[in-house]
Length: 110
Length: 113
Image (cartoon, rainbow over the protein chains, first blue to last red):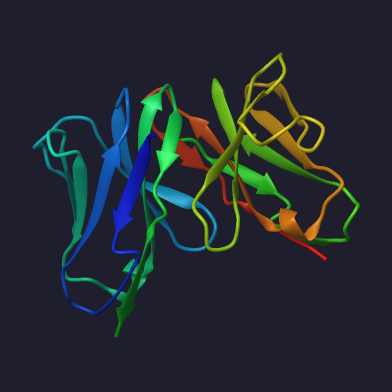
């Protein structure tokens, strides 16, 4: 059965720390892996990854995909309280059909 | 990315009633989706809203409970029918932009008493 597993489920760090969020997957017909940030209701798109080893970067956030070991990581450096959110990972297996992970709840303490 | 709006933003409803949620996009999109996110859970796809034809429902969701309309390429509605407290959730519409990425509307938080 296809699945996407995120770890840890929750994480509490202090402002300024660096965090690494993990997403592993077992999905037939993998097309892409997506990361979203969910603060209140709506997930906001962060990254889409399709190729191994190519880092995507946006400010303090970066992500990379390993298609051999079937995982992705999302790094956030110099964390700020505004980074507190649930981070969702999803794998696209067929034309916008997504399998979602359970999410990592990240809390940044001042 | 497309700009997506949803109405209502939140609502409190009595069991047995129905609520229709609207999703409006500022540009024509081929793919529109409706999701549910129950408290503490991840997203679950309810259905794909198809323009000009019946929606495609995921396992566990049926048209009688969640009728969907898609009259054109910028608008869709989801109705939650004969509601029970178990329907209390966040309901989200999303669109596919042709770049294999989905963008989400602001969501509707529903509480059923």
